[in-house]
Amino acid sequence: MILSDSAIRIRLESGSIGLQTRPDYDIFKQIGPASVDFRLGNYFKIYKRDRVQIIVPGEPIPSEAIEIIEIPDGGQFVLHPGQFVLGVTIEKIKVPYDLVARCEGRSSLGRLGIIIHSTAGFIDPGFEGTITLEITNINEVPIALKPGMRIGQFAFETIHGTVENTYDKRVGSKYMNQILPEESRIIRDLY
Image 1 (cartoon, helix red, strand yellow):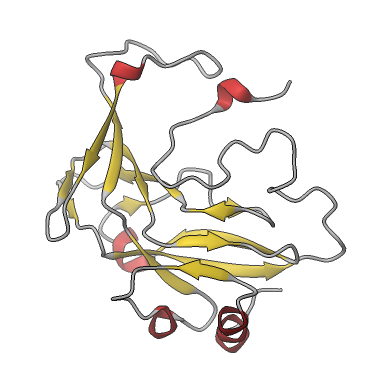
Image 2: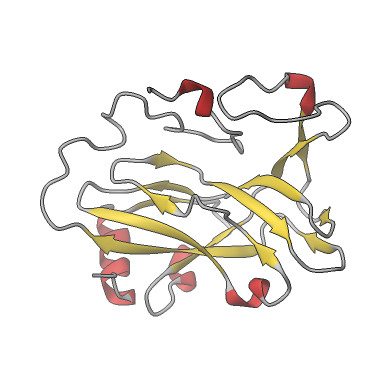
């Protein structure tokens, strides 16, 4: 079952759901009927087409093919039509063992053509860190993204039963405690 606004508020107030943000942002004012909004951070990673001809999942990507860009507060990152970038949340989330979280886009931005995750919208019990956003512009015109803008929302669902292998204890958890947008670590998969 998805947590309601009152259940989210209780969990945030008790510290059961960890959601750290900057002091200038009142997370409680961002609670919707069944989710809480989060904001876009200042860092983006882009894949440089002129530095890599093909990406083969499981094979290393040359470091020179990935560029990290920091956009200052008040600045903007222009996302061009069809462009894909990795972004990051300002908020750092800590998911308790009895919940999963979902990272979803805001409909107001979806109506402009912004997608914030390709497939990675699921956040496991025990995960802690910022969330890497897989941002794509499917519109036909460029769109300006501004650090600090509300870009998505977290919804929380209860788990039936006890999780025996939480993300923070699982062998092979690749993204625990991430701070910056993190590119794929599929090369570290245990096959």
